[in-house]
Length: 414
Image 1 (tube, rainbow, N blue to C red):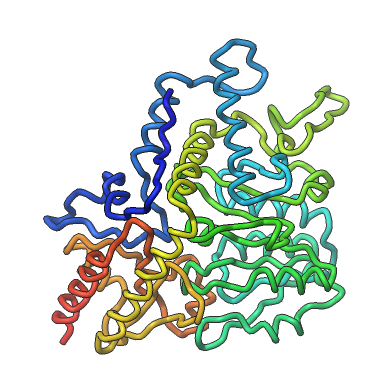
Image 2 (image 1 turned 135 degrees about the vertical axis):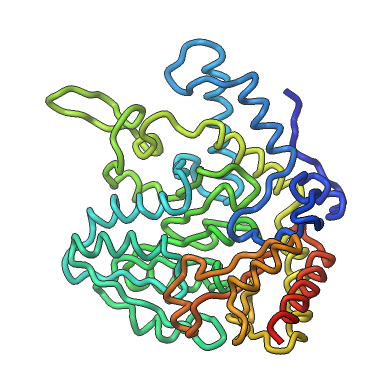
């Protein structure tokens, strides 16, 4: 098979947009404007074609197969691990664990590392802006171990109160688990500083990178975190697949999270011994096609360049904020100095779901609701927001359509 990832010398985002077939269709009689990228990004033809090629010509189970087709599938599957290691600058490809997504990755760490290392009175620090996936697993483990959850507050502008965080740290702090970019506010948190402060206190860190991995260069060794998690479908890859990066010495000391095939060394009814990292945490037939799809997505994003992607998206977010600011009655939820991709807002007299429905009738896809972040909604005393989230294949015309759609919707409530 020929290499399918686009090789882009000069970034032309108008041309790149053509590589996303889903964007070139009508919804409810209008050209589609897709501004729900924080929920799931779209897939370029290169990734879709690679998945199709695997299913047509390479499909076989991986590992242990002596026949050629199985060896080909295994080579493609394991090549994905190496590509992801390079993409995030991890020190060792065996620090890359394949999971079903960000949620699964956090549950793995909470149940394997947390259940092994937490005891009564130990402390886990989260933030007020966390996604439910980075709250509930820690609560479940805390209930079983007697650990205590502490929460970093958020300022009125939607930024973490770092001084308050410093005061929360103590010798009993065992874990600091923090979202990198808020899916509800767009706030970019200073994770390198957060990690350094946690390590000074003797704590281990986990960074939820689901919203950061599609939008900026991620250098694990520079951030210095012990665990980093993200999902394929946020970064132009298939759904149902994700990554747990873990520091190798921590992974090697952690017990398996699930039991089954491939995570074992030897099995008898008297005793089972476990495989080495990373296979110890990858029980059963893995998501082979999804891993190959993410590998292709990594090639695709790398060919464009994450710096170019960040620059393009920053311009679009700034333009969106500028244009939305001119709409009477619109109030932003989250106005951090550093933010990416996400713009959330409310009207006091228009419910978010009503606005989202009217926008949908005009072919404009946004997300409305609490965004699986109910604590931050309560912090700002709103039941829900309308969230427009931007990707590199969006353009100013998409933002203009959003503005027109909102003004049209407002006419129903005036």
